[in-house]
Length: 165
Ligand code: ADP
Figure 1 (cartoon, rainbow, N blue to C red):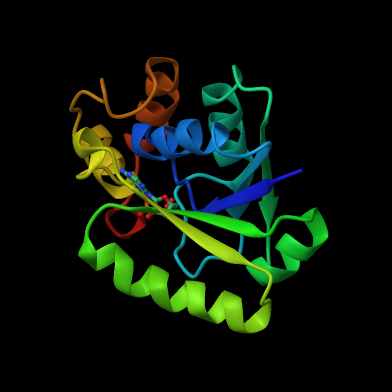
Figure 2 (figure 1 turned 90 degrees about the vertical axis):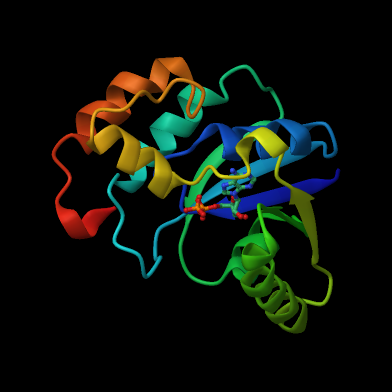
């Protein structure tokens, strides 16, 4: 069985993330979306909230699982039996860091391959930070996140303090 892991903060998930999940789900038998819990960023949404948002967004897929992980990604890969890591690339600026991480993971776990999927052009600008910024100032999230997540994200972002975006 070909299992891929799509790791990230997903704080919160956006249509850009969901596009990568959708495309990955067609390439692999199983895709595990892994929410990182030990990120150096201080997140706006708790891990449980991020997982619940993702679960709501991907409930139509029978080969996509959502879970959290902490520690090294390679340890999580070994535990789940996955040998492929999915990364979305929006611009060259994403690539430099992701390339370094891919080589690090390869050095730690030679069986792993990192698969870079380009962003779909309509989502190239889209990040979790953009979503939070728009929501915070009362802009419309239509087209940026699934419609059924909009009230939850708006509710949380309306009282964000300056340094939490
Ligand atoms: P971000 O805050 O940049 O959205 P994440 O850690 O949540 O960060 O991103 C997880 C993965 O999803 C990364 O591989 C990132 O490059 C990718 N990603 C994020 N947004 C998009 C997008 N709009 N299109 C394609 N890939 C994306």
